[in-house]
Image 1 (cartoon, rainbow, N blue to C red):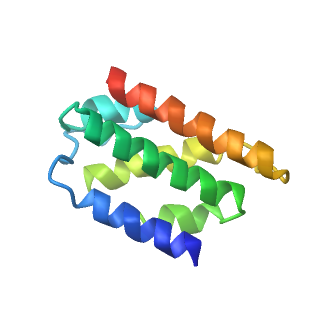
Image 2: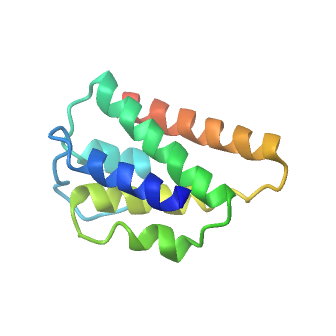
Length: 120
């Protein structure tokens, strides 16, 4: 149930006016995708992006399959392409069993994505 809620929040954030389609379909990491996504570089966008990244990592940590996480972002929009990259990056991190390790992985991933956004 929490997974569905998280994805609903992501969908709402995706419809926000500050997210524009990317000009290129190339991939190569979230930093590159962020640079290609014509979004205003403001604190609100980067904060929302970090929150989405945390939700993706949280789903990774609770064992949601990558195919299910990727399947939500299938419209082909620039935002969905960016989220595909974030999902793949999140799934490179192991899923931990200890709650403290899971929380640490979520926070570190969100912080890393937030910093990438602010630098893009």
